[in-house]
Length: 107
Image (cartoon, rainbow, N blue to C red; front, side, top):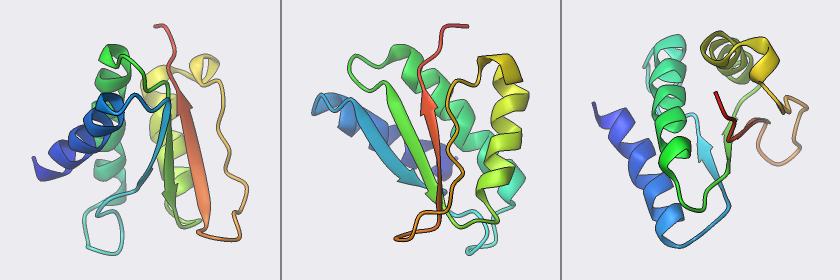
């Protein structure tokens, strides 16, 4: 799936450059007609695997509009369990909407 490959490529490049954090848009969700719930599942599943194997990236921020981020939050807590979600920031950001921050967790 192209969406998964796009997420993988972005995080792998950040890891190759030894970045500790990376911000990604909620690619294709909403504006391009890809179902937001399915997009959040694909993106977060890919990120879960990538963060487990990453050498340097330990934080990923998903950035999108205020209608998209709550769906990502719901998917995130469903995947990891509410007690394992350590930091989620859904406060409005004046420059680009809202963001959802994910940190590597040990499951």
